Length: 299
Image (cartoon, rainbow, N blue to C red; front, side, top):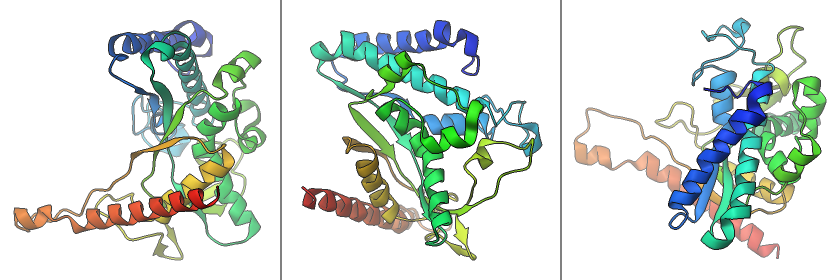
């Protein structure tokens, strides 16, 4: 098995292995599959596996005290994301060159993001929310749109952020026919000062402090899923932000939902009447409709 964090073997193994795997899929299923997603939530894999360590391979910096198997949360996440982006790009290039014309399908990537709400209207708090969005959403969206990372990441990370050469930038730019978007909740973002020397991590690199609460008040009603607070406006704001910032791409909502609160004492028929989940979907669909109406009225 070849590691995404290895620079020397990437071009020979990881990228080519992923491209070869993708080609098997194109060959075997392309007569039926017309919408291809190369990667689903690369942020989740990168964050969970190399920042917080709760997903395989369970790596993070020792000083974070997250019971990881080793790692460096200041460097490895950016290398992993870099390799994921390039694996995506070469697979899209292959599909477009060899299969798209005959199979008449489309190909893209699915990203997940919170919507980040500044804790106040102060400029430095708004900037903090913008940086948080760059470090989660723009980290992947910017490269597949223009072929490079967000300026905020380049400025704050310096040499810890890998660079794309001209060829890589060229194949990344525009490497999607559609964007899949997963949205569940929003989170408050507040300005944070530079971390202590030797304690760099993706967790603090954006100079932003994140929380579901501000002044003791949650960002939205709690749900049956502990990390999801109901914030329907976020899906509208994220869609409109993407339209304005990234050239109005074709977007499919590929994930949205919530677990309802479990009540084992309720009769089964009553438990199936999951009012909380119904309300979550109703409000998010309404917010989505608002975004569509806004876009339609602007043309």
